[in-house]
Amino acid sequence: NAPLLPLGNGRSIPQIGLGTWPLDDAEVAPVIVTAIEAGYRHLDTAVKYGNEAGVGRGIRDSGIARGELFVTTKLNGVYMGDDKAIAGLDESLTRLGLDYVDLLLIHWPVPQRGLFVSTWKTFEKLVASGKSRSIGVSNFKPAHLDRLLAETDIVPAVNQIELNPYVTRAEQRAYNAMHGIVTESWSPLGQGTELLSEPLLGFLAEKYEKTPAQIVLRWHIELGLVAIPKSKTPERIRQNIDVFDFTLDPTDVEALAALDQGPDAGVDSDVIGH
Ligand code: A2P
Image (tube, rainbow, N blue to C red; front, side):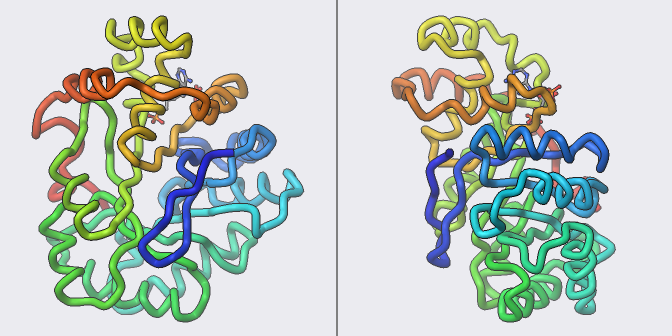
């Protein structure tokens, strides 16, 4: 099992979760079972992924008690504004076969539509109704969060952003930390592309006798982040949560952060997302 990280609202979140994009309903169910058997207690889905029903089936197939799990889903643009999130979450809960989620996120700020503040006020009602234990955001920049902090009551429990050694988002991490918002890393492995073949990762994998993916995930842990690596491969699913029996030297944490590709790396959520 992954250790729990405290959230600002007194609850807590397992520091490693299973990412499920882009698995479909049929693919994801057995992956969920494998992950729960491997010790995962945190599952991350979204309406937009189109796999909530499969995630729910996997949960039931695993036989685990609901209270053992931390389940996140996300509402995207069509659920923003006009209390649309109320029906949106009900639909997600029906697909998942659950009566609450642990964490509900606004998937993207879509700032040009000007709806994320009103959507957040609806999310606050969903906490009051008990249908989501905690609420948070995804892909929010400091300017977006500034507005929520100024105009609404509940501080987001988490901000889930693209984050890995190529896209380190130091400024956003510092902002989240200053406001008691836990930072969650999506695509923590850089979507399994060139990042895992970096010579530095080969070197560190040998030094610590771990795989490159385990080194990257441990880097997230050292930075106090929550990471949600996606894998559909049983051996990798097991490997990705087996990162709690070693630590990285601070100089190696810094060396990995130095792989950052600059402020323009990664998605720009002012222009992408829906
Ligand atoms: P697969 O699902 O085929 O196992 P991210 O979470 O950063 O988006 O990365 C997901 C990608 O990384 C997937 O393509 C996944 O492949 C791959 N991946 C996940 N875990 C590992 C691992 N331990 N070693 C190598 N590749 C991995």
